[in-house]
Image (cartoon, rainbow, N blue to C red; front, side):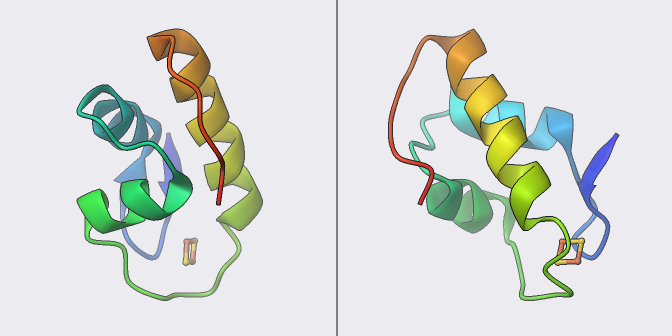
Length: 63
Ligand code: FES
């Protein structure tokens, strides 16, 4: 399922970024080549990022 339609970023993409070392939402965005869009995905991205961190056993800020 897509997290961000504007950037075609899926939940799997976010999980991959976290497993490869992204420690914040900002780092996930950088790793996925995120570009500014409508912004509707902000809350969903934070949720998926938190889930990815929980499942990978890492912890950090969601900023
Ligand atoms: S859905 Fe992510 S910027 Fe539009």
